[in-house]
Length: 357
Image (cartoon, rainbow, N blue to C red; front, side, top):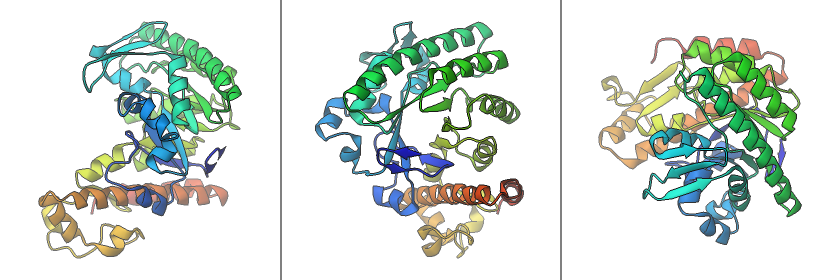
């Protein structure tokens, strides 16, 4: 993808920097790993520090000193998670801030304007995400509202383009877990002709078999020539399934969240650093990993840091987990170029899903 702040090779995993920072990692860490794009969140940045602060800094890139690309989520999922404190209408969403309880209204146009101030390289439309187990009628309402909001978002995005904004807009496919609604939503989103398309409403609590079924079903409805993005997936198995279905982009807080809790990825599966059998283990997290954590520190030392509640454990485990996923996706990309992705995926998962080390 050729974006305002450089080219992004796909498939690509995007680390999540909700508040204009990836928790426990510095910008130098992210550059060292090799990420070309990361994700920040419109909802959170709108509430704190506020768009006026980011605008005064010259945009989000200058504010956080990140010279590569940024995708911003519209805040639709965050509002969805605030169910007791929000009200959705045709106009937009009224909600109470999780920070101070103040009331706010987000409309599709306002969300475009906020992301323009942030100077997002990719911005997402405001959408309505319905939960696993939602009724058919609720899913229909969410689909219709999301489609209407996309029309309004695209109109406002065009205005901002005329004013010099260079970021791309992605529409979002909804439809919950009803295939006829997924088809309808995909058709409406494709017809809107945005530069890229996201698949929303997956990985929201449904069983793995349902996720895989609806991932494949929805991805097949989208044009192959446009970037395709599945929102909110961050485990190796889900990422590889997405790649197999032609998905270009994915993001999740999972690798850094579990890292802060001492849970780390290895080629032979994931494990917890706090396990007693790591107490005297002088081996690295993963002998096959080339990251600076595995080159330098032992499992015994990392376990000590975790048990002592030292911040460094969160930093090192989060770095390793992001390096691990970035390296996995980079190797998947090479396998695609060499025509051996299916073999790569099978071999990776055969080892990864073996007994944990």
